[in-house]
Image (tube, rainbow over all chains, first blue to last red; front, side, top):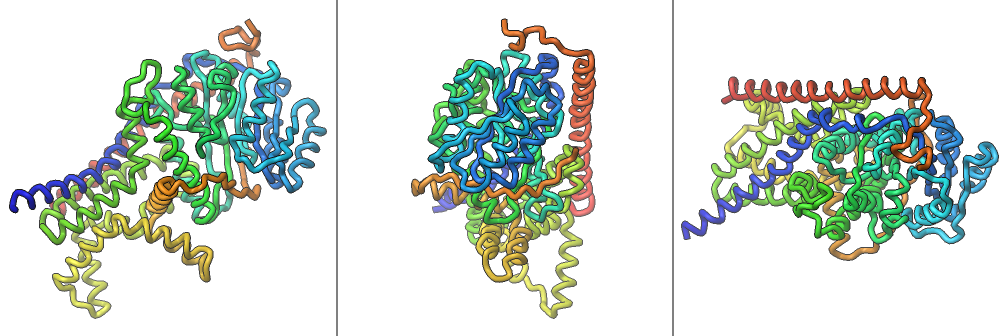
Length: 498
Length: 57
C-alpha cells in the first residue's frame, strides 16, 4: 500500500513538473530570439523585383478593399511589375463595384475575378485565383494577402529580395495589429502578435523551420507554388500552415522578414476572437494529424522533424492539457500530502515567475512601438489573479502582510483554515482561470456585457482565454463538428503609419 | 535565363542598391540589438531571483 501511494505521489509530482515544460520551452524559444542575428538571410539576398501577382480573396469587403488596393498601388515597387487579382467570392455587397472602380483607376494593374457561386471558404477562393494567375506566364512571384491588410511602402521589396536566392520558396512579413485607438482586446492581440510573430518566427528561423506563413502576407516564388501543386489545401482550416509545411517538405526555405511590416485589423470582441481563433486552433489540430509522419522524425531536406520544433509545436497545442494535469495533480496532492503539494507548487511557480519576467520584458523591447501601446495588457496577459500569485511568489512577506491588513480591515481573522483554503484556491485557479476567461465570452453578449466581458478576461487572463479556445477546438475536432469558414468581420478602422 | 529570375543580374539602379545596403545594415544592427536586450532581460530575471532569495529565502 505504501509503495502504491508513493507511486501515485510520484506520478502526481511528475504531472506538476510536466506543467513547467511548456514554460521552459517558451523560455528556450525566447532565448533563440537573441540568436536570430546569426541566422539572417541577407547575405544571399539582393535588390530583386520579380513580376508579382497579388492575390486577394474577398467576400463582402466593401469597407476595406478600396483602401487596400490604393495602398498597394503606392508600394515602393516598380508599378509595371505589380498586378492585383481580387477574387470576389460572390460578394453580396458593393465589393465588385469598388474593385471595378479601382480597375478603371489603375488600368492594367487591378484584375477583378468573380466567383458566381461562393461560400466554399478562403482556400477555394484562393485556388480560383491561383488557376487564373498560373495560366499566364507573366507571374514570377505571388503574394497572397487578406483584403484588409495594409502593407507599409517598403514591405514588398523587403520580402522579394529574399527570393533572389533560388533556395527560398516563401517569405512572410511581420503582421501588426493596427486598430487605433482600439480597445482592450486589440491591445491584447497587439501584444500577443509580438510574441507569436516577431518573437516566435525569429526563433523558428534560428531553428531552420517556420511553423506558419502569416495568412495575410505570404510571398511565394512561382517555382514554389508550382512545386506544391499550384493550389492551396482545402481539407483543413489552416491552408496557410499546410502551404508552409509543404514548401519546407519540398526542400525550400521559408523566410520571416521581420522588417517588412504589414498592418491588420484584428477582432475587437471576445466573440469575434473566439470565432477566429477556434478556426486557427482547429486548423492546428488538423495539421498535427495531417503531418503525423513528420513529428520528431529526421527529414533529409528540412527541419520540420527536429526535436526543438516538435517541442515548440506540441507545447503550444497541448498547453491546456498541461495546465489541467498540473492543477488536478496539485489538488489531489493537497489532500494526500500537503507538504509535497506545496513544494511542487513552488517549483512550478518559480518557473512561472522566471518565464513571466523574461518573456514580458523581452517582448516589450522587441517591438517598443507596440510595447508602449500595449504594456498594461502585457502585464495582465496571465490574468489579474495569476499576476497576484506571481507577486506572492516573488514577495511572499509583503503580499502576506497586505493580505493580513485587508483581512483585519474587513474584520476577518486569518486562521490556518483560511490559509489552506487560499492555497487550495491557487492550485485550482491554475486551470480554473481558463473557465473564468471563457465566462467573458458568455457575458459579453448579455446584460452589462461591455463591462463584464473585459472584466472576466482581465481576471482570468488573455493567455488562459486562448487556452480555453484551444480546449474548445479539441472538443470540436473530437466531435467531428462541421468545419466552416467563419470570416472575421472587418470595418476598415485602422490607422497605419504613412 | 529570364531577366528577372533569381540569380539573373537584374538591372538595379544605384539608388535601389543604396536603399538595400542601408536597410540591411539597419536590420542587422536591430537584430544584434535584440541579443543585447535578451541578455538585459536575463539579468533582470537574475536580479529578481537574487532579491527573492536574499530577502525571503
